[in-house]
Image 1 (tube, one colour):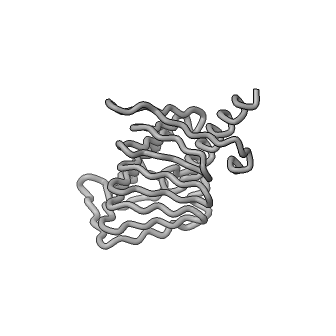
Image 2: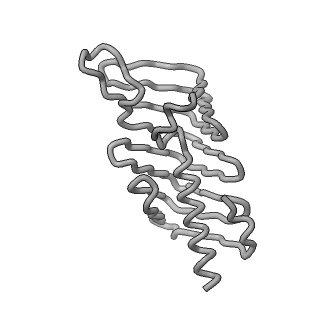
Amino acid sequence: MIKYFKIFALLVFLLMIIGEYDIVYVQSELKKTPIKIQADKLTAHNKDNRIDFEGNVRVDKQDMILTANLLTIFFHLNKDKKTIQRETINQMIATGNVRIEMGNKTAITEKAIYTALNGNIELIGKSTKVWQGKNIIKGHKITISNNGQSIEVEGGRQKQVEAIIFDELETLSP
């Protein structure tokens, strides 16, 4: 019974860390606190309804930090087709050396995708890993669906999913 609790607690941790990725998990909290994005270059592509933040990208939101080589934000345009509204984000994609830190929770991946329509988050890459304390989950693709209601971890062609769970329950604290 205690082993099942530990596995459940680790999955709850994954839900918490992904549910709190405020940069890729845009919810009502986005409107309450500002997001600071820094990069070497910002390019707006009006024809494609997107903005690219390139080079040494750093996103700060409350106690969350995301770093990547590139962050692309795709938008819906409002009715007059001339201005972009923040609440009309379609998708956010962070690529290249993606690292997300929140307290003692960390995720690293090659690519992170947030899709606003369904609330899904995908972490994709050979070395995708999420950990809190000494507890770790690794896989080629980690998908969080239905706004954090379910998680699926997939192995790659040559690597299975790997979970390392320690007995100390205190390392699984929220």
